[in-house]
Amino acid sequence: MGKRTKKKRQSKNDLPLVTIVGLLVGLLGAYILAEGALALQPHYWHWLVAVGGAVIGYTLGTGWYRWRGDIV
Image (tube, rainbow, N blue to C red; front, side, top):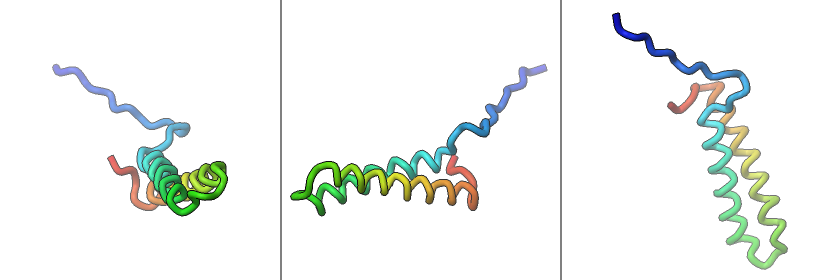
């Protein structure tokens, strides 16, 4: 008989891939937009906007996961 392969189960502590992708896209997208729009402002504003974008991306990714499942 052949060997059985075990599927890796996702534990409750693991983040789904779609949530991680949403977080990274939100972070990078918001940072790049903030660099262009807030070029003359102090630099910490760029990072605050980037963190806001990451929170929005995480929220959208989690919503996608609950609605449609993971992207893999």
